[in-house]
Length: 558
Image: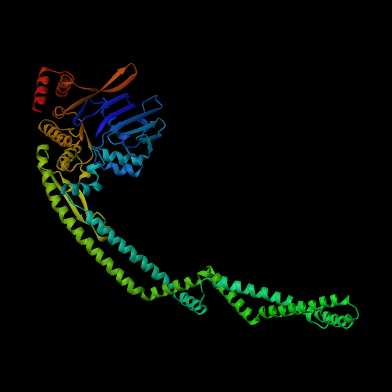
């Protein structure tokens, strides 16, 4: 509920700090005193359009701060959490808005900057403002279904879940159909690609294996050429081994002639043996490094084709096998696609029927709730001098294209103000006074289902008096009593003494002038001052003893 309101430099209000309590608070004052300014300031902090004309003349900016006490189960908690705003438990929620004289404005929730859109959403959950020209709340058809569901305890959770299941099934079916349509267009390409890849049979890791084998064979071919040249140097007719053998034989013939040549001959013999061993080793190495040209050509051709396929399909060579499997699976899905779509179509039909059954049950519950709500509102109309009027909660079945998670209904409050006149939407009624009383009757009927913690009624008693004004005051007090038990409050701006007498708290709005400076102020009335204000409202500018006596009677009745 609203606990405090601080206003600075808004039109005629220079500085004003107000505190509010539970129950019914009435605001009175002479015409032109500034009651509308107070509501304009409150509207500004709740997200209304920022008009530069609200800034007090000569001041650079205006500001309005409102503090609210939040109930433990307030629906506002989820909205604040979504926007990373976390009020401390037990601490008030502080909303502040500043407005510059050039029209620029800024908004804060618990000192955190926020958008005007968020401010409006927060304000709608905190305060309901009802008046003759209110375009929100009860006059907005978009909220009528939620109000009816709350009144009739109509649980739409099952319908919402069934709608989600149905739409998810449709989305899955549509995605499968689109995929199938796209795949069918590529059937010939897929078939050719799968045949090509299947025939080639690429394997994961094959590129690395072929490249390594080719590199080894190319290296072996180069080494084989070098070995052939070495063998020629060693084994030819003029090779090193032949020359060593010739030298050894000649030395052998002359070694016996002198002892000093024996050592040289032994060395030559060892050299011949070592050279022979080298010849054998070269021969074995040559046989091991022998490269099959046909095998090398086969490897190179396979590697070339593997890489060409990878470039063609724009994948890595190692992914060709997986690509072939995926394309084969796509072909299989195409072949089985129609059967799969039939299954998905059946799932959609089943989900639709489940939704329809739950939506039908919800519609029945809503129609029953509408009958009870119509009777509850009708019971309030006669005391408000609307006994010729009729109220109807219209529950209209929508075409399938407009079915939603909330069901297949459209709910709107309708009224007929004259006998025989057709019903018309609540927000299209011509008479402001009648509309105000209809709003009050409807709000009283819906009071048990809650709403915003703070309800503000702006001059809904305009144009009525006597018993009708008394009936309005009695119903406002009833709302306040019910609100008091749930921690809410009712604030009413009124010109009616019958309504003002019902207030638990009474605030007087008055305008004062000092030279060329005019200010609007608010004064909390005590019991004696309250008696005088109600007497003024009864008699006018000159307060008579008869008016004071009548004010006493009004106050005694409550």
